[in-house]
Length: 266
Ligand SMILES: [Zn+2]
Image (cartoon, rainbow, N blue to C red):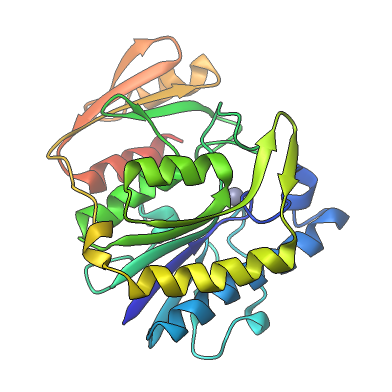
């Protein structure tokens, strides 16, 4: 069994402030370690369920957060950003048996996490795909859908876990915390690590065919930027048009083109 794990940091247990997510800040280290240990727990749960090949994408900030020495031996870690449009699931393809997401967070403008954003907190107010307001979970989940890879497990804030289960009732989720305004209410970090390990094992031992998303034949993408300048610039992408000063729209049939659009305009 070949498993892909995509890991972010804003949904790691206790993550509350941007200082804690910033490698240049003193508050970062405990969260770097917690992220690494939550990913290690997902690897161990996958191994217990029979995974013999595990690829991990460090998908936060610089892409250089996870402490490789804390991962089980044999796991391959993708660090940094290649520039491939698949972004947080770089090199995901049909050969994987499941995708797992660890440390994911609520979408931009949503109250589920003090650090809510979609792809760029500096640039993006919202992203809609086929009129659904889109999180990084949904954006990258559709890549798995295109390749027929089951999205089996997600850990992150409680609101995102709710969104995940509404999107696909077959998937297993683990809520690390609940966002309340600019605060979080978290469970104990060790309890979270145990729950991720057992949740991943349960998810991968279940019926993975129920975790494959249906994949639409076409996609209308709307990105609303924080600033009108971003939308004006993006409106020059081939096929894109300006809906209003801050919003750009484009229609595509291949989901790779959706991710390519986001790569170049965000
Ligand atoms: Zn992040």
